[in-house]
Amino acid sequence: MLNQLLTIARNTFVESVRQPVLLLLVLACALLQVFNTWTAAFSMGRSSTAEVSADNKLLLDIGLATIFGCGVLMASFLATAVVSSEIERRTMLTVISKPIPRAVVVAGKYIGVAGAITGAVVIMLAFLMLAIRHGVLSTAGDHLDQPVLLFGFGAVFASLLLAAAANYMYGWSFNQTAMTTLLPLIVLAYVAVLLFSKRWELQSPMVDLKPKILVACGAMALAILVLTAVATAASTRLGQVMTIITCAAVFFGGLLSNHFLGRQAYQNDVLGVIASAEPASTADEGLGSRGATYTITLTDLPRQRVPAGSSFFYGANPNGFSLASGTFAPFEGDASETAALFRPETPPGLVVVESDGTTLVVRNVGREPQAVARAPRSDDYVFMRPTRVNPLVAGLWAVVPNMHYFWLLDAVTQNRAVPVTHFAMIVVYASLQIAAFLALAVALFQRRDVG
Image (cartoon, rainbow, N blue to C red; front, side, top):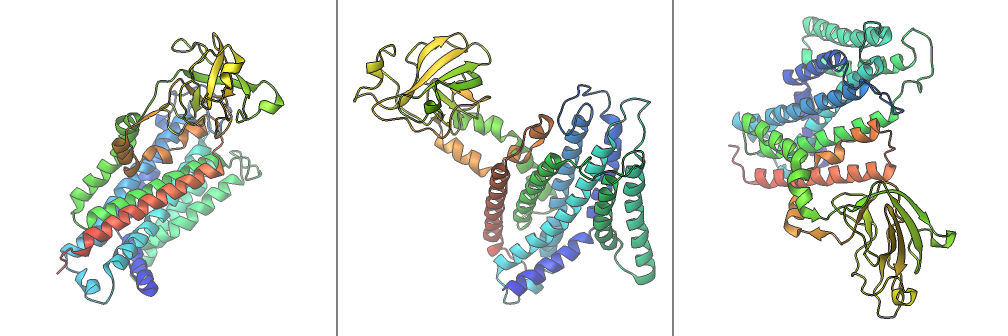
């Protein structure tokens, strides 16, 4: 079965890279990245300490969006070409007639298409990184980045020239040769650019290397692979036009899922945002011990009155999803009496014992300590009640591929580090989404008439 899977994947990969639409979209993306260095000027003039600053912030935003859009089109066209078109032409029958499980056929088709799209995405991301290195031409005094122009255009022209020569002399597929030669050449071109400054001075490759942008690019590539699984599932039953419409619907639905589903799945009213959180003593650090006290300073005045005895909830999400404080019953009693905070009948919880403007004093009270996932910290959101959950909407929100999970642009432009654990969670999320849509593809294809 493994040999069958690899054979189908290899044949699908070769067929995919021979599709003219793949090369056309890659070259179109390269041309658009060139135009982006002109159109993003005079828009984000404020500098920052992030990996991109000033007008380059918008350049990165537009560049990633360009690759995202091209990736959606690639997934739709290639999945249709290797699944739906083969069913319509009856060529799929030659594979199904052999003792090969249909699940293996679907998995092999996806692996082949995903491999071709991954190579194309790497090429497009290399174009983006070259554009970021070149930067936006904001003023007439800005100089062209000669290493970027020489190595970047040189890689494109060399691959097209080699493809044309191989097609003329040996009859090789022009599209396949161009794609397979452009991938290593454009990567080598980017590496070569890192070794030279704009003035052709030798430098360390770490000077212009953007690791946070590379992480954001990796997350976006995972999103495109998820959409490739969606296109594979849709193409088992639909034609090219409907497959494209389905992929576009899933894409835009994933972008809007937080607005239409996320805010309905978990509902809570934000009291404020934490500016600083300081323990009363070293013994109170973590806020997880009985009697632990923290002084919370909010960025602005609370959005409603906070009397002593109010419950204190906090977490990283403005809708109250996954509260770090946990949930607990409200405190009933006089918060000014220390004895009332720790009576045997007092349930565990976090209670505001003092409130003065933007400053709140919070204690961990009750017959036993309230368990917290972590201590409150800057930029956490504060609430006065537990989050209300709508199970049905939350389930739909979990099923729809959420494109916001893969969009790490804000972390790059705001100079925020992306933890390894967060990226690992994105990988797991993408893997589960791919597995789910491939399972759907197998179910749809299992009884499809291909004769």
